[in-house]
View 1 (tube, one colour):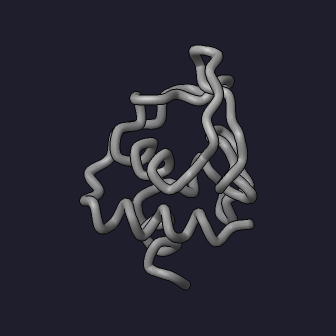
View 2 (cartoon, helix red, strand yellow; view 1 turned 180 degrees about the horizontal axis):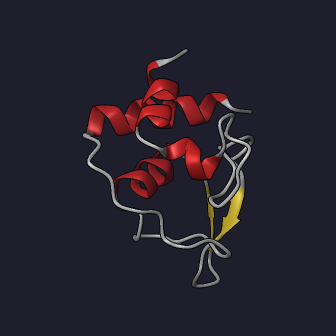
Length: 91
């Protein structure tokens, strides 16, 4: 298990995003990296590393259409990056 995967589990991310990143209450992580998603304001964005980092660090910054706002977290930048790195691997 990678550090990011363990952090996602320990931080409660998997409760909404699924134990294998398959989604649920929150969007799935499988195949998310480099995909295009629609935001609540109707705009679209390509999910890159910067988007993932911002979405985890500041969940209310760019809310995905069809999903509620993710709760805030207390992860530091290194922990957020580890989770981002894990999400990138879920192709």
